[in-house]
Image (cartoon, rainbow, N blue to C red; front, side):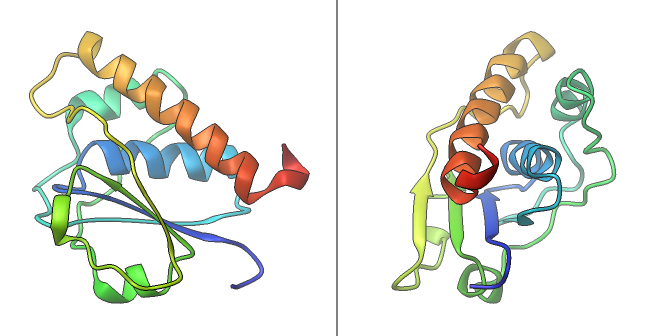
Length: 136
């Protein structure tokens, strides 16, 4: 493991859940965690409601670009968090994997996306406390 833990967030389109999770991890870890995100079938753009919901929290994810998750990203990450990508995520022995059962914000209103955002934030806070106990 490098001097700081690496976390990869994966969802199908890399346009909503994984982007919000990566945004929170970057903001809340204050650079103490290397953050990556990807998707099995990347979308064309970040979900506008995810962008709006995160902006309410003071976190700008509008410059993110959905990208394909690579085998190398998985292999080189200490923790891999999947969010509904099913069996398409490669598995490497010795890695920490978690599957977060989160509703896909695609096609949802801002009022429907806020609880998803809040759930992601709570999970990030728990993960961060586990990865960086000295900062908790």
